[in-house]
Image 1 (cartoon, one colour):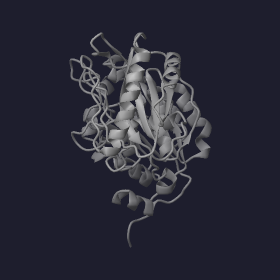
Image 2 (cartoon, rainbow, N blue to C red):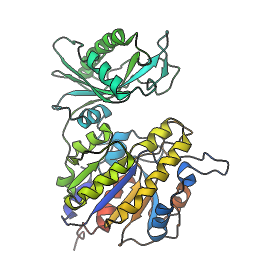
Image 3 (cartoon, one colour):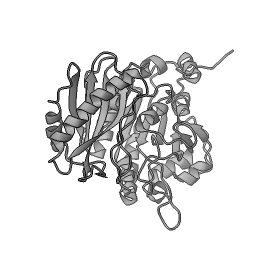
Image 4 (cartoon, one colour):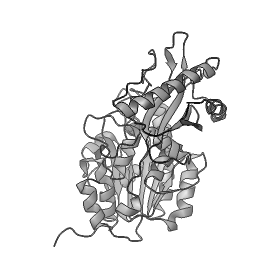
Length: 402
């Protein structure tokens, strides 16, 4: 743990007060309209605007200014974990999110089914977002691949995503993704950074070769890309560090995996947005920290669909009164990272943050948006400060020093 997290651990006290983190994945944006407004600024958010007027807002950097984060480190930062020290790849998070029983030393990899042309050039990095049912079929075929003495497990996740686990002694995870991150290029070759990773690369290349032969006649999922190659290790728990009884209310496996890594309780959630808030209401008496995760803001941003992203933000705003009716002592509304629709990708832009609590000092802002948050009372802070701030406002931290 970093010194800040160590300090918070020493000061944390167990109380019945409640903290809610409402996370709209990829919330931050860039101007998309003629008047220069972002997706959040274009969205009609009367409930969040009213909260800003009576509370405070600001901006947060998930990693550091100028650094575009992946979803894993961005979320770890939200929960107060140093995202550089605790760098866990997406493969592990995907595997944990589907309840795969990882063992220390396992190499977990997220795969995207993708589309390539006759020259092997990627034309769609997500294979048209194939159905989950199709993903199940393809994963079952790939699961039959043999890698000599190593064990291989291929499991479906959701839509175009699946998880691969390679189990063998002495494997390393210092390997790049094969995903070029753009269309019009071939998958990247694996480049191991040390000898244990060279062993992993040999096995992964064998897997890719066999998978290519299996998928070659499939459309649109006729190839795959490897992402987030990572080795599994255990992390300090939310309960152990913060004395919080934490619940994860998330629909997508990757975010459930991250919550499992921190030993939050994973709650069953239906597919609709409203289901997130149904579960929050149902279990509110049983926990002191709630991670409520909305994925579709990020999906819309990655698809370049700013209008759909606006719609998702507005739909979340309509659910905010249900959260407020529960009277949490601290409510934070933000994202894990920015996903501007104009970039169709994660970006380095700082995140708008709203902090609502009976114990906060209101600033002078009256709406929830990037430019308003630039002038908010929280200032511009690292995302790792958000949970300690919420704990302080929920009166969960003792005084430091005499």
